[in-house]
Image 1 (cartoon, rainbow over the protein chains, first blue to last red):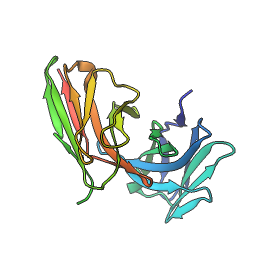
Image 2: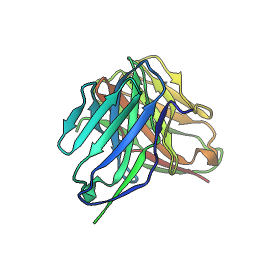
Image 3: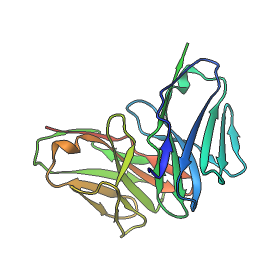
Length: 109
Length: 110
């Protein structure tokens, strides 16, 4: 079993839709959690950190469920420009992060 | 602009040639990393450096060597390139607030 697993998708949604991605992790000692966005042929870029209490940034909401060991990313009112691959990352305390393989989202007109 | 700078952006090598990928960051981060990403796949860690003077193997270190020259610079060397090393290579540095990646090096070994 991989340390960090994501549904690879692809998720194909119409503009304006709400879409959610989940990411499960196996190491219960993990301390920090992140979502990254990667556009085609570009480097991953940090989208948002995931806090225990959940956090929101505009149309994006990230949540953490420690008991079930998963994090989620919710995108509301999807835009064409949201089309990308979304990577989750899990970090042990003071250690390196482990990345999921990514979930591909395509938002269509 | 602050960030991670990688060179070169593109490279074509013949099998058996050697080369060094350069990476520098100006964010005063202690930790630096080298990843490779193959088409349709996730990031695989080659080597990392938790601090200046230390390096450790990642998931796929075979065929690579690294040097943490100072706090800013972390280079990746291919001693004898093989077609299986055709990939996109990303350097990154990190703080408690996540990773910053370089723009990548697209390497083709023929």
